[in-house]
Length: 296
Image (cartoon, rainbow, N blue to C red):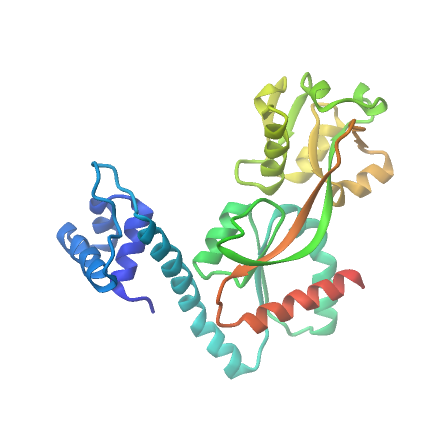
């Protein structure tokens, strides 16, 4: 259970406004201000910058925000942890981004169910940004991420390095000739929603070449991987995704990998969890077991 003054501070950091924080906490604005002053008196530092009307944190305030978020997330995990110990159970409660959740995890879960038919499993498939928030809120034990995340805020372990490729219809003329990335800009680009790991990676690759998705002929945004594959097959546009997610379609000739000149994109799949978590051994047990089952 988090100290109510720290809870007020975190809410203020989230809303960036004293009035909004007071409304969210069902408090008065002077009470919110008093909680912040009490924290500043206790830690003997300034937490909120007094310069100008715009809300901002001092460097000390930013540090306290990170510590308090970690403390709050871990405090939410203590009760279920104690119940696990009491019941001598090792339930599996985690999140995964779409590619990992649809293509990497199912065979692993199949093996886990074969070994332990009574196990309780909860898996949430969301984009990278949502899963990071769920970690902070203590709703999941760990996340399997394919996108970029702040490595300074979390503990993480490497699952594997995966190849990221361009994909198109076999009928598309670019399927049979090696092309530079700039040579694809006349195509329609089909991509995932904002916050997804695959989109983050593509945008970073384009940024490094002074490009963006807007430089393509047209952007088609689809949240479903199978729908993206089908549209590519019908030659509506091209897309970029992990080879792991499309290897069956390529093997069948349903889709073609775009032969790109001088580009080899490799990105890690990461096992991510909170720093200083009270059940670290439990979380790392699942990392080791998942790696073992994937290799098997």
